[in-house]
Length: 257
Length: 209
Figure 1 (tube, helix red, strand yellow):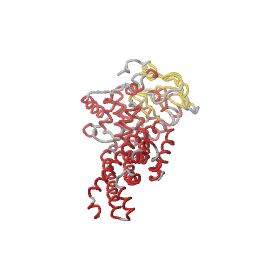
Figure 2 (cartoon, helix red, strand yellow):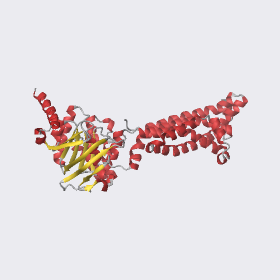
Figure 3 (spheres, rainbow over the protein chains, first blue to last red):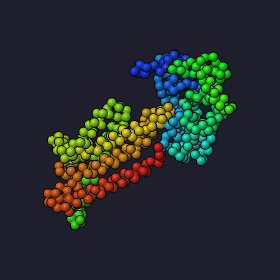
Figure 4 (tube, rainbow over the protein chains, first blue to last red):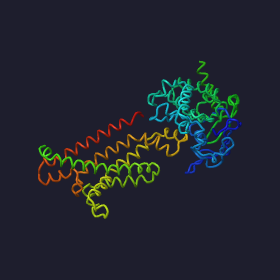
């Protein structure tokens, strides 16, 4: 793997801007540092630019100004294909290949990376077990034979299959029912404790951000309002942060009755 | 029916000729149409031009198209050559259109995931887009095949042979038996082509959306 886990800073945004061809600016002056092994949550409303930020990391979107580096090496110096194979990607709609079985979906990148057949099979079973899907029961199924939660688990397994040190997640649990979502959040938490990947996780759910994140970056109207530790976030006097914290506390109040 | 039975050899020969005209022109239509359809998904600007012109070709009455191509130097020299080119032109629209529609219909998250996972453009095409579009492309080929089998009967008007020989002869002789000797095998051929391509379509799709 070309990306090493040792350095402290995994991903760095330096004064990044993204402007559409028609002139509208979607992101402006983004400076952000993601540390190796941490889970950084990008929290914000729809249209705040968090997904665009995420997609810049694996070069699905190219900045119109500024620079992003991974492990100190500017993205422009990375071959996009090599880069993407070292970065896991999980999205809300999952995007499983409907014509491939679970095994083929999960083993695709290892196969393209020319792993030995036995190693691929072993790895597929390993990551499926990791996301709570026993291979002997699920590996031969097709995506249409899975529930929404199972599909998302397969998506996660696929993202982890080639052992990428970095994981990008775009509201992966957003479309699930509340119970399945809570289950997957808990399992992701356990998984992350074990694997220590560098994770950038986009969400609009402040509860999810506080549950899963080591730090929270708050996005607002195309700008990064700030990056906060959890305690810091809960105590912040910043009015944008307060709005989220109030929503969170109101939700907890309801739970307590 | 009597005529068919007494002229079995001739029926078989003209059926073979008909099949040959259809097969060659379909092969050309697929060889040109599928890459053209793929090109349209990569260069959307060409879409109006290409789909427009293949559409226009289809609106030309087939008899007129055969006639219009007749004076062209290389084409007009041999009737079967001309017929094959005209038939291929007719078959082009469903093949191009369905290739384009099939690939454009691959869902956005599937495409996004494929690119984000690090598939190259050609891997995206061969491993994701074409397999997922294949039922739609095949449906286009099926439509084109049925059309071509029918239109190919008219190729006899310019002397390219095929089952149209019987039909034109029957009309001239005002003899339904002779007309049917051309029409029945052509209809059977269309039904068989439709059914077998349909079966192939089912065989290819082991998934559901």
